[in-house]
Image (tube, rainbow, N blue to C red; front, side, top):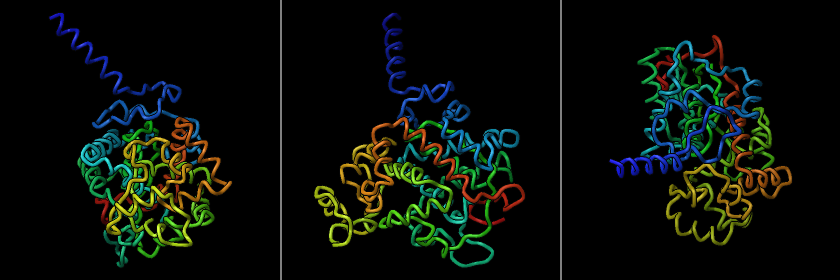
Length: 357
């Protein structure tokens, strides 16, 4: 029995080292990357988010409220987290997709879940059919699953827009970011138009820095917010048609020779993909900022950020201070989630995220 007890004790110690949990004490106890290994539902993480100065300030500046559903659907965030983790265990690349889904929603008509709609009463093509979305926008089935679960427990209470914001937070949490508070109270929109998903609203891979800054500023996001959120590319992939032109175009920003060789060997078709960070693809770390500083970014718009004095110092600061970046990222994501929200009696609470009631 003594030897069995020692084995159990050893396993417990190893488990404690490999799977550290953040306490509810606060951000001072937070260690970047500690949530990276979370692959299953954990109620403690859902109910005890960590607050940082950047996140707290962003919440105070916005129209939404923390713990919005505590009195009406207490377990709603837990149900979203469970859906996201179940899919993440099988397909870790879904994390980047959920964040992108949230950003593309918020940048067009505000955070109203308009890009989840398959059709609308006014007819015509919806946002998800736009070239900027189309086959590259994924994660809809996770939102559907979470919505169905919530509707079975709390019908007509939780909006699809809030579910999408919760899911984006959970995706970042599972890849390495601490669990930050997401204020809620968004309502769902009834309009979704393909025509509104052009370059004036959706950032493009070859956009000039001036254009990118204008897009973010128009939505109340700063240059720092833009650079900070760009670091989320650490966990994503890009389709070859977004960057393979750089190896042949005389006007494109030159690409690193070794990266160009990777592009030639990988991009046998436009729809193939390459990871932004090939070493730690599913870990939300600062390596991608370092990749940009080393001139090895695959997207031209990303690489331009190390050329401009408005952004270069921010890239450097984020590259070598992961705790600083994570703290600012939480605040930037909350500000993203505040863009153009419908509240109160505006919009509706959809029964099905793909259809207007």
